[in-house]
Image (cartoon, rainbow, N blue to C red; front, side, top):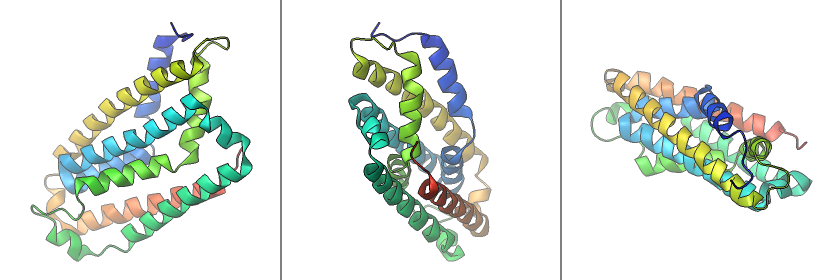
Length: 211
C-alpha cells in the first residue's frame, strides 16, 4: 500500500529510536521534574509538534531542497543554533528565587511556554529534517506512485508512537519528582543542566555541515 514496505520493521526501528536517550528525552524529563505532569506533557507535545514540521517538509520536498541549497541550510542552521543558545543562556542565568517562589502552585513557566520551547527547538534543528529525509525513504519503494503520501503516513506513525512514549516518560518524571519540586535549589540546577544542554546542542547545530 502506497509503496511502503517492511512496515513492522519500520515500527520497531522507530520505537527503538524513540526510546534512545537524547536531548528531547532530557528536555521532557527535566520539565517533568520541574513542573510536574503538565510541564512534562507540554514538553512532549511541543517536541512532537516540531517533528511534525519536518515530516510535512519531507513529504513535500522542502527537506530535499534544504539539503540541495547551501544557503538555505546555513540560514536554518544559524537561526536554530541562535535560538538554542539564547534559550540555554537564559536558563543558565535563572536564579534560585524564581524556583523557590514557584515550588507550590505557580510554576515559573506556563505549559504553553514549555510547549513553544519544545516545538521551536525541534522545528529549527536541521538535523531533525535530515533524519526524516534519511530514515523515511528506507521504507518506501523507489517507484511508489505517491511518495509524498507514503512519507507523510510513515512520519505521522513515527511521531504518534514517539508522542505516546514521551507522554509516558513525562508521567514517570512527574510522579518521581514530588519531593524534588519542593526544593528551589534542586529545580535551579535541573534548569541549569537543561540550559547547558541547549547551549551545547546549539553549538553542535551551528557546526553541522550539509552533506
